[in-house]
Amino acid sequence: MAASPYEKYIRRDVRSKTAQEQHPEVPGPVLGLKSDATFGNKNFALSWWPISQPFEMVKDTHAHDFDQFLMFVGGDINNMLDLGGEVELTLGEEGKPLEKFVFTKATMVHVPAGLLHCPLNFKKVNDPRKPILFHDFFFSPEYKRKG
Amino acid sequence: MAQLKTAKYLRTGVTRKSNHPEITAPIPVLNSNEDFGDLGFTMYWESITRPFTHAPEPHKHEFPQYIIYLGGDTNNMLDLGGVVEITLSEDGQTMEKHTITKSTTIYIPPGLYHGPLVYKKVDRPFMFIDIFFARAYERKK
Image 1 (tube, chains in turn blue, brown):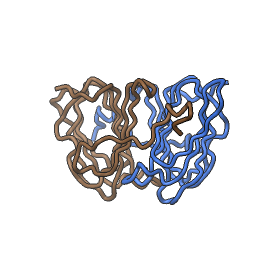
Image 2: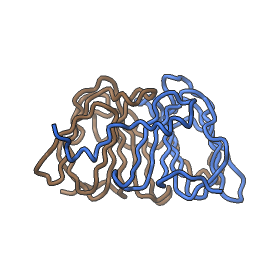
Image 3: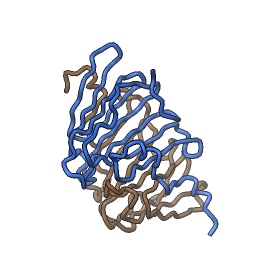
């Protein structure tokens, strides 16, 4: 059967091997969506990470020139509000003290351009069969830290 | 947490109401409004637990949308665990049905007809994630 012209709107291979290689602590498949010129051109990348064991994902406090959303939901998809674990994230505005947040419920974090963020530490995962589902959603064609 | 100066950058436990009686699990939501990035998109997560027709009518809108299906076993999201049918059409006349059996992302540009959207088979719950770039969701006839 000839390929449908509408197949261009559908991506059936969603595995992100480059993301996966960054963190060997994440054994489950890491998935991704890139909105490039052939897929909406909205200039963002979104990735899905199943965090099934505690680890510090990002150590260094940093900022970048683009907006980012860090999103955390529970890996039990019938109860996504409960993270099933504990996450620590540090944020800070330029020239002000860094502040550490600890959360156990589904949480969305907006990291505007210039906002200092991290360390990002997954402190606790209650049940490795129900990982914390972490999403990294950034609005830039490529990920580049500032400074 | 409320006393921290950067608390405005976090939203915890925010949900939206289900529009479908078949969807009963809590629905986390992110709305990037003027207080939260102002990027003008909404994203939400739903758990599909049984076969049903999510959107019976073909429709289109003026904003871009991403429809995402991922497996509900979050340690192995590649395995969808169900069968989804989505119909797409550029002109509203020639309708083309696509069958999704693996985790998949779908881009719906402004003006592309989509629907019906049917969950034919659910072997185990899977995730529906919707991202639409609009201040409010409005269909166009």
